Image 1 (cartoon, rainbow, N blue to C red):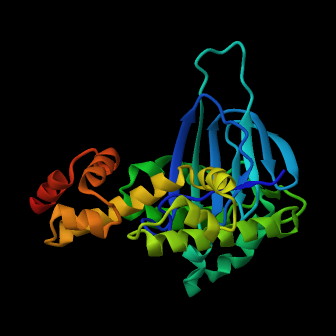
Image 2: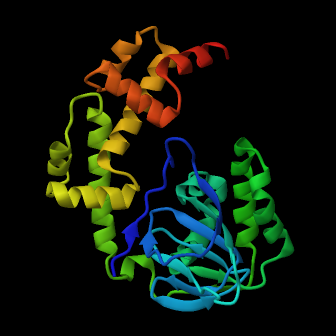
Length: 287
C-alpha cells in the first residue's frame, strides 16, 4: 500500500520544526511518510508499529527515530475491559538540514543515515527521557535550543537497533512519493503566486494535471483541507498583513486579497479569524 504524504502545516514558513503531544482514545492505523525526520516517544499505549518493511509490537516507552520518507504508522490495541482508555505520545519532526546546515553539526550525518532504516532505542537514558518530558514546558523561542540538545543526547545512546531491512529509497513507492511531493510543491507554488487573482478549482486541477474530482480528493487527503479552504486561509493571512501594515481600506484589501466582494471577504475573515477585519486592525493598533 502506498503511504500518504503528510504535509506538516506551517513548517518552513512559520517554524523550523514541529513538536506535538498526543492524547487520544487510540492510535488509528495511518500509513504515511514525509520529507522530515521524526522522533516519536510512546508514553502510554501498546499495539503494532509499522516502519518501512517491519511490523513489530510496541508498548509504553517505545522510542523510535525515523529518517526522511520512511513510511510508518502506530496502531494501538483496544482493551475491551478498560473504559476511557487513552494513549499518549510526544513527537518531533524536523528537516535534517536544520542541523546539517551548520558545519559544527555535520558529524550527525552518519547518524541521520542510520535513521533511514528506522532506529529503536532500548533503555534510553534518564537524561534523554527527561528532555522529552520537559520539552513542552519551554517557550517556543527556546524549544529549538532544546531540540538540538535532545538530538545530541539521542546521538550518544548506545542501545539502538535498526528497524527496517531496507531504507526508504529502496522501498516500493519511493519514486512515487518523490513525484507526488514535486507535484504538490508545483501546485502550492502556483496557488501562492496566483491567490490574489480569480483562480478556480478547474484551473488548479489543470495545474496538477488531474481531473477536478480526483484533484479534490488528492488535495484534501494531503493537506487536510479542501482547495477553497486552503486558498481562503492564504488570502486571509495576506489580508491580515495589509490590515496591520498598510493604510488601505477594508474594501481595497478585500479586492487585493482576491475576493470579489466585501461581504464574502468579511464572512470568510470571521470564519478564519473569529473577528472582523476592522476589529483585528484596531487590536493591532493598540499594541
